[in-house]
Length: 465
Image 1 (cartoon, rainbow, N blue to C red):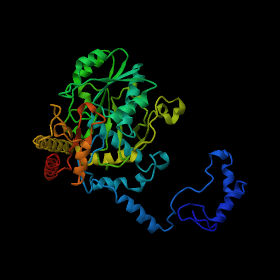
Image 2: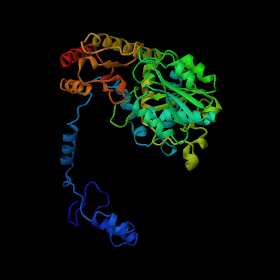
Image 3: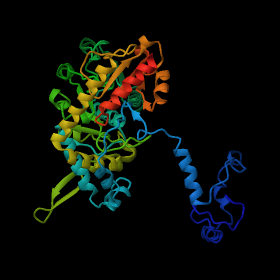
Image 4: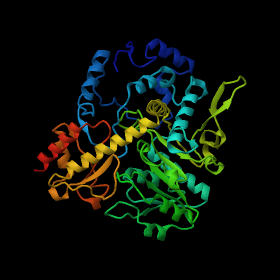
């Protein structure tokens, strides 16, 4: 800030001296500092912050910020094979066109004070996701997949009256940490072992651990490491035999070619709609969902807002609005058994635009294209000396593990050299899955061309030589 008392800051409202004095007079104070007199003196800094001088010119400020942003290496310039929960997919231009419309973009989450079609847009999102998942009830968006699965487990605890969840050990470390933090007061998270050569759940271990205290058994299909869990029906049979619910996490971009989880016994399905028209963003741009059958025992425990449809007084007119609102934390407040927090409505509206463009045939084409590219990449990389693939002898979708232990090189070293060649390598798994040693999770989607994959293979051959 300028030391000139008559200075008016271009970015701070009401910084004009006369305006400040009028505001102080209104609250019967002589100086702004008096508003903070309740703060103990020993907690005050009592000096100016050690900050660089501010930019008072909008042009200078923009130039400075741009110079910081230019240091980023983005997926627009580099080819990325990173996934692990946030994936690079093609975003049709119309998705950005619609989600940037003022009636959608400006409101926080779309309450009735700002409803210019948001309720209907959200209903359409829920409906299309429900059709894709083959389930009748789909939540408005949670913050992300982790938030969705944590709430789904809490739902299972309330429905069953039990206090334990069995979770597959190949769940991503961040998601598992979120579950434990979110659920720790209500339920214990126990891990299920997997077969090391397939990645599939060890059914004998499940049979030993599942009990009358198990609220839910949770697994992902495709799994975090990319392999498909083919034992869904057997897992559900074992869990349901003791009254436990089945919660399945799913990447919805796989559902054009994979059967939805309800077909093999899922009671609650969760995941993330980020692949549907949403750009990757650092710290945002994700869209968790929870889905169930239309049964009162499930609907009563949804922590999210649900949008429904009702006939209007005029024929062929319809109204859209919240249903069973009294079960949510917006009404129950401190008595609520679950809290959703920030909702990602704009991302869900974007997903609705994407799904309406794709249709069933488009989702099949998307899934097939990803499977073909993934299979080609796995075959080509497996021919590189020092790279072992597939680590797990199971069909994969979109992601797969590459074992670099035989190369004698660390994944961090490999990724650094790939970056110098304009490529983001796979996610380093050495910390989250130490039993895999120097392994990386690679991701291939519909945006990767044959040339992209061939260039990756060439670069890996050079790096591992």
